Image (cartoon, rainbow, N blue to C red; front, side, top):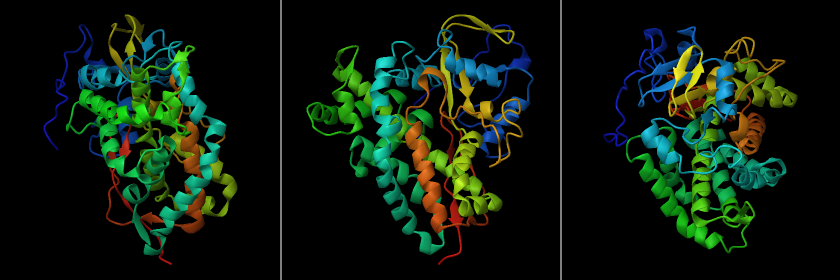
Length: 411
C-alpha cells in the first residue's frame, strides 16, 4: 500500500463540552478490536454505551447513530440530515462523492434523476436479465464444481454481479479491474489516489462513452441516462457524467460483498444448507434472512442545522454515520438478532437503506441472490470452509469479506 493521499487528521478535536462517555475510539474503516467480524464489531460498539449517539475523532471526527430509531431518522429526515455529503472523511471522500448524482441531492430535487435510474433498475425492467444471470451463474459454478473447492470471492463473487453489471451498462468486461479499483476508493480507499482523483478518472473514462451513447440506438443504462430528460429538458453532459459515475460506483461493490458474507456464513451452518438444498420453498426466506443478518453499509449524512439529539448538540455541517448493521442487529427490532433463523416470522432491516435514497439496485441484487441459491444448491448441496482459515471482514462505508476457500465432496 502506498502512503495515503487522503490526508485526514488521525484524530479531530472533540466538540466543546462533550463528556468523555460520548467519545469512542472507533474507525469505520478499521473497526476491529481483537476479532475480524464486521457485525460483531458494530454490536460491540453499540453495547459499550447506553447512548443513542456517540462521537469518534477518527476520519476528521463525526457522530455515529447507534439506536435503530435514530438510524431510521438519519436516513429518512432530509430536513435535518442532508445527503449533500454521505461519506467520511468529509473534506476528502465526502466532498468528492458529493459531486455524484442523485445521492448527493435531497428531495424533491433528486426525484427526476432518481426516476432515470428507476426506469431501468426497478421490478419488471430487471426481469429480462434473469436468463442471462442464470446462464452465467451455472457456467461459473460448472467451472469449478468438479474440483471440490473454490476461492469464492475471486472465482464467483467478483465474477457474477460485476459481469452482470457490465452487461447492464454495456461496457467491456476487460475494463472491470480499472473501474473496480476506482469504485473502491470511495468505499474502502487504499491510498493510491484521492477521492477527487477517482471522480475525475471516472469522468475521463466515461466522456467518450457517453458522447457516443447520446445518439446511440442501444438500450443499456448508460445510453438511457444520456438520452433522458429531467424537469422536461434534456440532461446536460455534466449531469449525465455525474449520474453515470454514481451508477458505476454503486454497481461495482455491494453485491460482491453481500454474496461473500452470505456464502461464508452458510458454509458454517450445515443444518441451514440442508434445508435450502432439499426445500426450494425456503429460498425466499433464506434470501431475506441473509439480507437481515448481514447488512453492510454505513452511510453518512450532513447536519442541516444545529440539532439536539439524545441530549447532545450536533452542529450544522457535522457528519453522522448511520450503520445499517445496527438497525437489524438490535433485539428491539428483531428477536435474537445475531441468529440466522429461516423460520423468523418478522424480518426488519435497512440493508438497502431507507427513505428517499433507498438503493435502486435492490431488485437486481435480490434476483442475483435468488439465482445463486438455486443454481449453487442444485450442484453443491453441502459445503464447508476449508480448514485452517480465519474469516476476516473489511470495514468501510461498504463492508467486505476477504478471500476464503470453500470445499465440498468432488464428483
